[in-house]
Structures are given as structure tokens and as C-alpha cells.
Image (cartoon, rainbow, N blue to C red; front, top):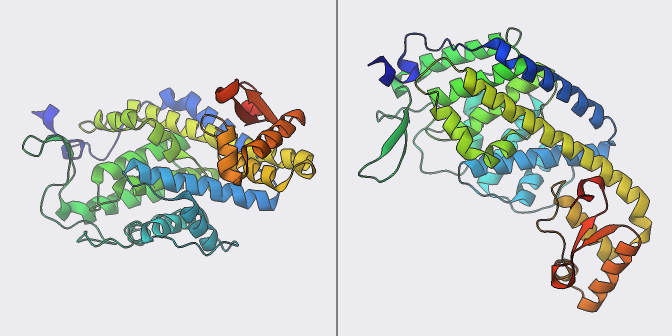
Length: 371
């Protein structure tokens, strides 16, 4: 009988237990990575730093939305983030959903050090549901009497993966959660606190919709408070890449309050997110060096293509740059594209791989040396 209880129905809820020693080495790696990221940031000028911040935040906004099945426009989100940060931007039209997630990311960035409160969560929820007309409860905890269940499968034979606490308990559950979160900063190591905070919130599932995105934002706020600066963490990038494992790890612990394995999984996710951020920072440093070296030796067509290659990030232009890509980006002729590409190879701006129709071009920076 006890085995069938959801974790919130167990007498120990919400006093989660875990093996602190199992996390010790990961906590050390987290601290080391944090120092490396802070150090690397110092080598970027202010203009590029703003660009990098917008790039990381927009990537996180895109991926946290994708996890929930929403596919938004990167340029629109970047426009909204820049506007909310008071930076110069274009007049691009932005959807309510894109504006809302961007607004939430900027609020998280600016006010990371403020306590987490009911009003903060309600404001985030309003931002995330900007433009929605299908929800009864916006900017407040759910109130519906039906069970809040995570299900899949056929409508006539649904499989219940999890059932959250009933709506009438939300005020008490969230009051306890917020009290724990705001008191735990000085008591729990960073990775453990972020993992518990995310897991605890997700299992309460206090909102009618948006719990996953808010839960990931809470984890980032926890990390930011622990390090004393905005986290700029690519957490959702990593979760989206390992979405099945993420949901499996949550599902494996929804009937227990002993969460060591969950914390190990989530800690590793945060470390991977740090590595992703560090690569982005290094990439921006390489970008500055690149333009210092080559900007005077390229024409406007070549400059436009190189900018597109850099916009693709350190992971590169998917499949490499082809001659057809070059023609489409610059709207030029095949002969001009061939000549431009050959010039950039000769000047060691690009690296060429493959032959004939399989020829692809990559920026001559450290991330592409082994392509």
C-alpha cells in the first residue's frame, strides 16, 4: 500500500533525503566551472558582453518553450530581450508568447538576488501566459477540482505518470515551499539546492499551465543566488537535448522522498549547462579575435555570410556552409559565390572539407579544426 503513495502523500513529505557525500565531487566541479565562466567573461568587451547575454537568454527562452512543445522565433525573442534590457533594437513585430517568455527571462536576470515570493511567481505566470484565453487561472494558483495529472496514451486508456496535490492545498503547499526556498540559500550547497527546488516545485505543480518553465526558472534563480550573480545558465538547452532522460528521472522519484539519484542527474545537467555556457563565452572571445584579424580583408557579401556563421554559435552551421547556402544568403551568382569562397579559403578565413557537391566550409577557429 505504501509503495503506491505519491511522494506528497508520504508522511515525510516535503522533507527530502539524499546522500550529501555522493554530490561532493559534483559540487566541487560546479564551483570550479563557475570561476572559469566568471574569468572568461572578463575578456569580453561590453558590447559583445551584451550580445552574449542576449544570446544565452534567448537560447534559454527558446529551449524552455520547446520542451513544452512551443516553437518560437529566436529573432523576435532577442528583440524583446534587448528592449526589456534597454538595449538598441529593431521594430520587429513580436507575438504575446514571445514577449512574455522574454520578459520573464529579463526579470529573472535583473532580480535574481530578490527573495522568491508568491507575487514573483504570479507575475512570471502572467508573463508566460501572455495572450492566452484558454486558462481559468492566470497569475494565481490552480483552483479546478479535477485531479492535476500527468498522463499519456489513448484517451480511453490513459497512463497516469503522476498526480499532483489537490488544488485546495496549493496555498499551504506553496507557502511551505517558499519558506523553505528563501531559508535554504545559506544551508544547502548550490547543486543540491537547485535540484531540490526544481523537484519540489514540479511535484506541487501549482499552476494550471507553465509549471515546467517556472520550475526551470526557479532552478536558475537558485543557482544565481548561490553564486551571487545572474546564472546565465543554458539549463533548458541540456534538458531539451536529454528530454526523455529528464522526464524519466522525475518519474522515477514521484513516489519517494529519497532523491539522491535525482539530484545526481540534475547536478550533471547543470554541469553540462555550465560547459555549454563556457563554450559560448569562449566562442565570443574567438569571434572578437576573428574580426580583429580578418574584417578588413573581406567584402560585404563575405561579411554577411561570416556573421550568419557566427550567429549559428559554437556548434556551427548545421552540416557546414555550402555554395548554395552562400548564394541564398547573399543573393549572388554561382560564379561570384565560388570566387568569394575560394578567396576566403586562400586567406585562411574558412576551412574547406569534402569535394564537388559535398564541399562544405567552416570558420577557421578552434571549434572547427577537427570538423
